[in-house]
Every structure is written in C-alpha cells, then in structure tokens.
Length: 204
Image (tube, rainbow, N blue to C red; front, side, top):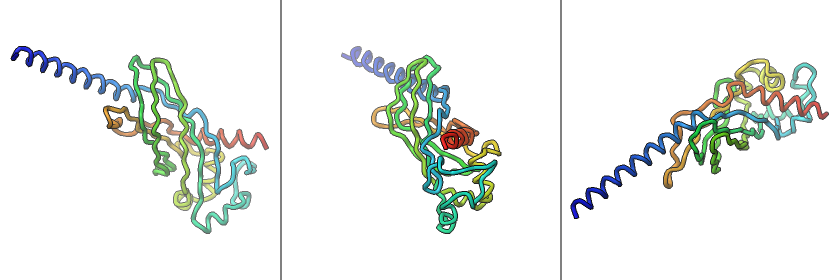
C-alpha cells in the first residue's frame, strides 16, 4: 500500500512538473511570435471618415470641418480599427486567450483595450485580429500643437509618433497568465495610419 502511494505521488509530481514546463514554454513562445500591423481601416477624426478630408501637402485647421467645435468642446476623437497579424514561427503550439493592448501617441498612453479571443496557432500559421480604439487626442494635441499633431497624423513627419504594444496571455485552468510586460508591435504605428489616409484620399 505504501509502495502504491509512493508511485502515485511520484507520478503526480512528474505530471505537475511536465505541465509547468509546458506552460512556461508557451508563455516564452509568446515573445517569439511575429506581431505586425496588417492595415488600419475605418479611421475617423472628429466624427468624420478620413476619406472626407482633403490635403494639400499638409493639413490646416481651416480645412477640417468640425475641428473648431471639437476644440471648443475639448474633445477631439480619433478612432480606427487596427488589423493585427499574429504569426507563429516556433515549433510550440500556443493558444493565446485574452490579450491587452496599448496605443501610445507622442510617447504617452492614448488608449488601452483588451481582446478576448481564442487563438490557436501551430508552426507557420497566422491570424489577423481586429483591434478597435477610440480616444480623445485633445490633451496630446494641445500639448504638442494642434497643427503639428494633425500634420503628423496625415503626413507622418515624425517617426515613432504612434506606437502599438500588446500583452498576450495563455489560459491555465480558469486563469489567464499574461506575458510579463508589454511587447512592442510597431514603434512607428504612424506608417499604418498614413497608409490608411493615402488609401482613403486616392478614392476621392
């Protein structure tokens, strides 16, 4: 009987150790995934579709209807859908459950959100996950200058103006175990926004 208990305990310890190693490998694999911004669409500024704005080498406040009222209300909303592509180049099959994301503007957090979606990627597989954001950029625009910020959004004159960071997790039991710290997906997120603007203006 004692021998049976000993064997049972040893098997239990081995099983738990194996699970712990597998869980650690999955968490570590999250940092080795490839994350990139596939595209940005459904972009709106001050409640208007980006396609409705005209540019001529730059953007002035006078050329943006509705901006004056937005500034008076101290509410200058910028919203869009970011299509995040996740690829697994590793040999570890990893299931991403919930992940948090941060969009920074001018080095400051602009929007924080989360996505609760089961993503099961084997080696070589990829998936595009839409991330929506809507934020009031009035504070940052006032601090850095309204004309400057609007021109940066449309022309991307300064590298690193926008940044996208994520914190993925795996599910263990009923608990989400998040990757320690945020992973920077795109340090120059403005490129993607600029492409969305150019694509929209081409349709005018």
